[in-house]
Length: 502
Ligand SMILES: Cc1cc2nc3c(=O)[nH]c(=O)nc-3n(C[C@H](O)[C@H](O)[C@H](O)COP(=O)(O)O)c2cc1C
Image 1: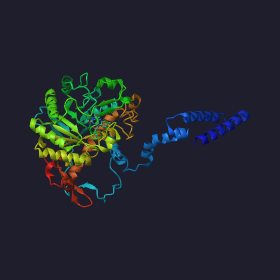
Image 2: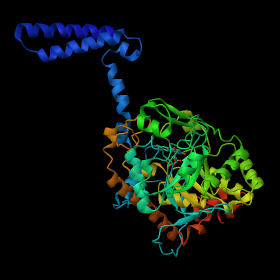
Image 3: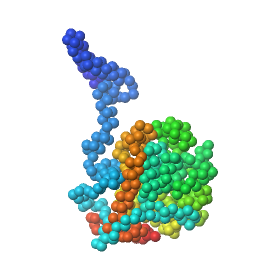
Image 4: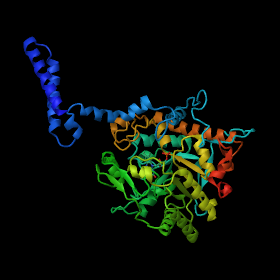
């Protein structure tokens, strides 16, 4: 191929030169050919890229098509029910709800309902009236002195660092208007989070915002922020579904001077939050840490977030809770299908339990230990519609968190560039120019409406099922469409149907 390139290239170069010198035409072509020949020569001599060595100019087309493949896929090939992690239909629904425009769908379902995996709600012949009030849940167990009335749907953990400052500000302003909470993510509580909205402050293994000079947990620094009035709850992050057991990654490109200062680390270096905590290393230590944070925060709700892996370890935590008689106020269960800014593919695709079995397990285990009534279960993992909220509640959740749905409300187009600092919508980038595209005042309204309209849709489904309150929901309102069997038989073959009622 190289030979052909040089033979054809040099021949074309000679012909064009002759034309130019004798007839004074083809100067532009001559310049282009000279550049291509020089580029080709350089490529054929380099040792790094085999494709460019063999195809000194045409090889570039491969890189170009590779680069724009996701866009071609999304714009020209993807069908409404395709697209991953979220289908076009799911994304459109989120955009419409965020823009507060008509989100109805025409002409009937595009899904094939006559398939064995179809699941649906068993609506009532006598639907209830739709609640106009959006549902709330009180969080605070027996040891909590500052319980918090939370919305049923909230913004899941996403750090400043993985998201831009404009994105964080828009999320928090939206949370303020809609009266729901905004989880800071493990990157620390920053000025951008402090726009007046309720905050759940997440403490990860890096202890950003509450660490001493050696990177260990600092109780004094923690107390300063934990006692701010806007901090309503504190969440200890043990793991997240997209990369359980891996820790956090802030790519060097996103670690700006500003972020490094907030986190107390070196700028422009890749920052790894270690996989495990240095403040504790077992179930006993975790429960003691919960007690410590509760004391330091003067009784605010304290909980932990995890993706379920080895189930016996979770049972050990429950045992320890009983032994120490110290209850977390909430447990956030993140499914393995959860999102992230950056994770190794092996972890994203092959580690941890998906949300549905994880929720069932956590709920059942808390019931078995007789502590379910003292602890709220929050869940996350592709909760993006009213249907997914109702299903999560039916499987045992008290409340839901949503990350990527709120990213869509900010304008995210699922460009899959969160780990490159080149997010074209200014959501998941630290590039000042790109983030200028995200106008805080406009997008905060969309955050507000996405929350409001999604919860309203959940209220409508609740009413269609003939229920008045989310506490009346259990798995018995769902069916398997093909067999007309109850989903409870599938999820609870051991007949523990009533675990979702408390
Ligand atoms: C850009 C991005 C950043 C995230 N950062 C964090 C984080 O700092 N801490 C955490 O516990 N989870 C983090 N997550 C996970 C989400 O909080 C959530 O658990 C997960 O994405 C599942 O929710 P979803 O399906 O609604 O996105 C992040 C997710 C995304 C997409």
